[in-house]
Length: 300
Image 1 (cartoon, rainbow, N blue to C red):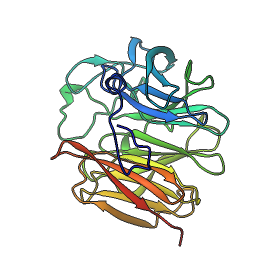
Image 2 (image 1 turned 30 degrees about the horizontal axis):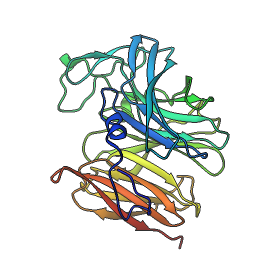
Image 3 (image 1 turned 180 degrees about the horizontal axis):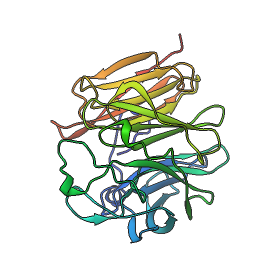
Image 4 (image 1 turned 90 degrees about the horizontal axis):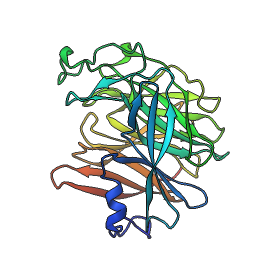
C-alpha cells in the first residue's frame, strides 16, 4: 500500500507491484534513495554454491507505480555454508532482510543473518530439537557501491552463541550523525532483550553486541532530524508495541519507553515523515492486517 499524506490515508499499489513483495524471493528490505529510486531485495537469495548467493534486486523509478525485477546480483560469502530451515529444507543459511540503507556517500548497506562455517551451537528455542540441526545465527552486513548491481560481504560482529538462546538475527541498521553505523538485533522468541553493535569504519568491523533494556523482535532503528534516535519493537515483555528513545542520538543511553499499542505480537517499523512526525506500523494478528499509528516526538 502507499500513502501520499504522511500516513493518514492509504491506497493499494498496482497489483503487479504488490506481487513482487510476495513472490518466492519474498522482497523484504527496501530503501528509497536520495534521488527517489526505490531499491528492494528479496530475502531468500538463490543458493548456488556454499560461498555464493544470487540476490534478487527490485527497482522502481516512478514512486512504486511500476516495479522492475527481480534481477540477479551475485553475492560472495567467503565463509558461507548451508543449513536447514524449520521445514527441513536444505537452504543457503543466509537471509538478507529487514534493513537496507543508503549511506551519505551513496554506498548501500544491507543486513543479513544465518550461519557461516563453524557456527554450530544449537538453537535453544523450545520449538526446536537438536535433530533439526538448527544453529544459533550470526549477523553480518553486505554492501553495494553501484546502486545494487553488485554486492560484497563487508563485516560481522562475530558469532556470540553465549549471548542468547537464538543467536543474533533480524538486524536493523541506521547511520548515525557522525557516520558510525548502528545495528540492533533480535536474540530470542518472546520478550527477550535486543542487542546493539556499532561500526566506526563503514561496516568492516563491529563491536561486541551489547544487551539493551528493550525486549522483542524485528527492532527497527531510526535517526530523527532533531538528533534523537528511536527504535520500534514488538513482541516484547509485555507483548505490546513500544518505541524506545536514545536522546543522545548514538544509542549510548536509552532513557524512555513509550507504549504505542497493546497486543503487539507482530513486527514493528518506524519512519520519520516530517520533523518530529513518525509513522509507526505493526501487524495485527487477530485482524490479519497492518496497523498504522502517527506519533509526534519532541526533544525535551
